[in-house]
Image (tube, rainbow, N blue to C red; front, side):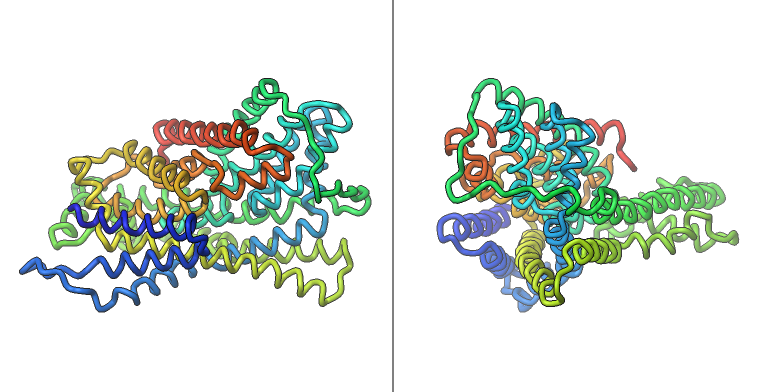
Length: 516
């Protein structure tokens, strides 16, 4: 099983080499690597073992790319519109001032961390940092201290949710690649991110005391004049584009969880009538499929058992099962984000009174930036799918002697993501590639916890090892007025700490709250 590892190495070297050394756009690099890996993954004649070039080598790349677009494109495009509208309407600024008013000026680092934590869910980290740095500089001018702590607090709040909470592209694509319910990804991602951001704030305070880096004037970036409070929208309407889709998706997740319990109770009753247990039925289905040369996960087998129980029962479906027929519509991420985008756009129109041309330009520019992200994330998913075609998962499992525990899978996902992050710099690319590889590694592995924890482990690894090949590093350094050495001494260890703490929380939750 050495050949699949060689193919994987060729693919990863292509991605890293084209992005880092040739400076080629990540979309071109990822789609090229996907095609090369697919071409190097020939069909094998089971009778003779002879390898032949697959006639569908290129078309299956396009199919995987299209499948990924179907999962993520609408959500990413709408999130880009929401972010642009929140910035231009002043809603993002109002959220920050709301935190400052709630916590007080003496707790400005906490306010900035909280603002970054909330705003980086629908708005990209780069934009959040641009927005909040002037507030950190204003705080330093008024109080004369803790400037470094403030900009690191922004990083602690913004970087963690950008990496763990959809609809930002990395966690959104991880959820699609791993088959994670999006509502569960949002809730668990936010839960894992919160203690990490708090620990990050304390680390920011330590770094501020140890290094004592002063605030410096940034050439070419004059200090913007803040808008008056009466020029900004209200706090609740400003928060609505962020909170509403989270609430709608969470409602469906909760309804699905309760419906799942109802269906499991039906399955228990049916199993008892047959003189077996649900677990025995699940195991029998898995064994039957594997005996026929296929593969069936425990989760899919359990779904089949519950569906059979529901179909055989003479009783009507339970309350929660009926409720999911409604919640799966309003809680669909595409509809939830569309409603949120309409609200964000309405706030922008009411606050700024733009012309129709201005509205069209705002939407067009946001969709153009979102379009590039869609291309990159879908190409990354296609690359991951071709690695599965190359049977990389079987080869890596063989390196483990065929034995892979649930916790081993968590640390493997964390390690692969961290290595990719160090090598090529992009957290999003690291998450996309790692989450694309992991389903192949999970074949035949029954995780003792929900697969959402594998997603948060991969996201945690994508924060470890950020240095000069990461665009976030340079945004932090240049907009913060730090030298490269100062950024390496602050940004890099802070993000590493965020990743390690997130991974620790993931392991604890997977052990104590497995959600299965």
